[in-house]
Length: 307
Image (cartoon, rainbow, N blue to C red):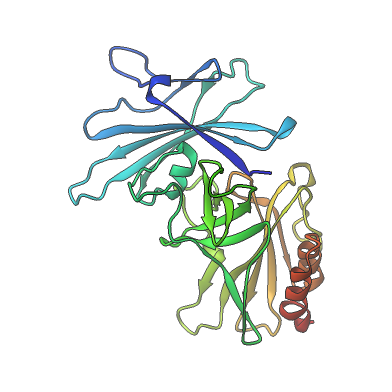
C-alpha cells in the first residue's frame, strides 16, 4: 500500500489570492473548493509555481493534505522556495477552510516535488535526487538496508523513509521515486515544526575524538509502539508510524545505547513515542516484527554480540 498519493492540481483549478480579489488561495479538487488562508499574493519576486493534493492512509485513518509552493528569485541565480501545507480537518465546523503551516528559505525541493507532483528544479525527475540507501559496517562487513521500508539520504544530506510500492516503470504514483529496481514513496524525515531541519541524531559523530556517535540503522512500519523499560512509556493511543532504531556510542560506556524513535507518516519526529534502552532485546523485537530472515541475521550480528 502506498504511503501517500499526490495529485498535481492544474492552474485551471485554483485561483491565487490578490489585492482585488480573494485574500485566500482557492483550490478546487473533487468538486470541493477549499479556502487556503494566510498565503501571500504572488508577484514577480514571489511566484506561485505549484499546488498539489496528497492523500495519506486509507479508510478511517485517511488524511488529505493540500500544498502550495512559491518560488523566490535571488541575486545569485539560485532560487529559494516557500512551502505552505495544511490538512483537511473533516471534523471542523467548515472543513473547506484550511490554515496551512508555512516554511521558507527552502533550497532543496525534492520533497516539495513529491507534495505537488511536478518537477520544480527542471532536472528531469520528480522527487529527491541522489538517493542512497543507508548501510552499516558490522564486523567489517557492509550491510545495506533492505525491505519494504528503508532509510535513505539524498544528495543534500536529507533523510528519507522509503516505503515500497507496487509501482513499475510504466505505472507509478507521481510522488514515487525509483531506487535500484524498486519504486518507493519518499517521506522526508524532519524535526517537529522546523523549517525542514534534518534530524540531528540520525548521523552524528563527535568531531573532537570520534568516540561519541549517533547513527540511524533501521526502520520498520508498525501499528503499535515498541516495548518500553518504563523510562518513556510509549503512547499507544497514537502509535501507528515508522519506527527508527538509532545506535549510540559513548566514550564512557562499554555497551552501545539504543533509541527507538517514531516518525509520523507525514515525516515529522514524534517524541511522545521515544524509547531509550541498553537492552538489545528491545531492538530485536522491533526488527523481528518484519518477519524477514534478513532482519534476524542483521540482529544477530549487529545487536546480540553486545549482550
